[in-house]
Each structure stands twice: as C-alpha cells, then as structure tokens.
Image (cartoon, rainbow, N blue to C red):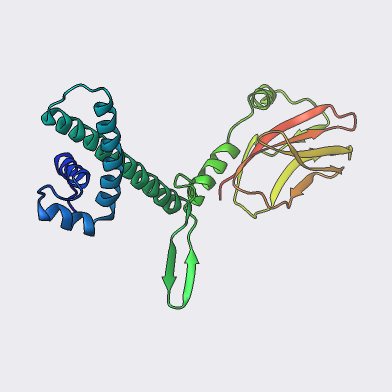
Length: 245
C-alpha cells in the first residue's frame, strides 16, 4: 500500500509555500507530492486553509509563537487527512457493496464446451422438486374427520335393505389400476356413485343400476373417498380408496 504524507509533513510543505519556497524542506516531501495526486490535492487544500489562518492571526495584532502556528497547521493537516481517509473508505465501501449486489443478483454462468448454461440461484432456499413432491403426497393423504366418522358409523349398520355393498370400507390400489366397486342390487335400483379427493372435491360422478362399477380414472398417489346414494341422494355407503404408487 502506498504511504501518504503525515500531518507534520503537510505542515512543513505549507510553511515552505508560504515562505515563497525559501524555507528548508525535506526533498522526499517534494518528490512525494510530485508523484502522489492524493497528497498533492491535500497539500493544496491545506496550504489555502493554513494561509487563511495566518491572515486571521495577523489581523488580531497579537503576537503568536511559531510553535503555536505549527501546531495549528498540523491539526488542520490531520483534519484534512482524516477527511480524505473517510471519504476514500466510503467510496471503497460503496464500490464493494455494488460488487456484492451484482454477484448476488447475477446467476453464475457454467460453460460446457461451446454452450453456456445460466443457473438460477435467485432463491438459495428454493424447495427441491423431490421435497415438494413429498409434501404434496403427504398433503393428499390427510383424512377428512367428518367423512371418517361417517365411515365408522356405517360399519355394521347398512343404510339400505335392498343394496348390500361387498366392497371393503378401505380399498388399496396401485396408480393406474382400475378400481372395482361391488354390491348386490337385485332390484336394479338406480344408484349414484361419487368419487372425491381427500379435500372432498368431487372428481367423478355416475349413475348405474348394475352390481358393479369401475373407476377407470388415473388416480395419483393419495387418499380418496367414494359414496353410494340412491335416487333421492340418501347415503347408502361411504368408503375410502388409498392409491399407493
């Protein structure tokens, strides 16, 4: 790091200028000022300020020792150095802040052969696809408390003497497989079948008077409910379907 002039050296240079360059001064100071733009600027400002101080002091017509003036000059020089130092630090900090901002906001470029691939790193805490899938699956398996109570109440207590449901209250199936629902309907009574997801959103509904109904809908992994109604939409049966894969 380049070393700059001290407050004392700037004070010496100010006295050198005020004596019309006749006073003694270290040649190293003159050499440094001729080569360092920062110190040269500080020296000019310092010389102007110190000259004003000398003029003001002389106008009071009170004798002052040279040593007092020197101390004043050194103090002024120190103030200028501190000012320029702080200004420089602020400038550097601002530049670094901009560099950091650019680095954070700009996705890195990964080069493979002649192709450049821009990676999106704007959200370092972005949920990974597999994690999101797991969360969605977990959400799709949450039971509905009211429907679960209906299923529990219906066990061993069928709502119709004409319809005898043979399907289990809980059916397990693989993704993509047909789901067969069976009952005894000797009177060929018109029946309504409705399929819901675990949030009770209706996915499919149909009418039949047969003894079997097949869900051919491609269901994703999760929990589903199905209900069987008569023509007056009185509930006959309620069960659930669990799609495993």
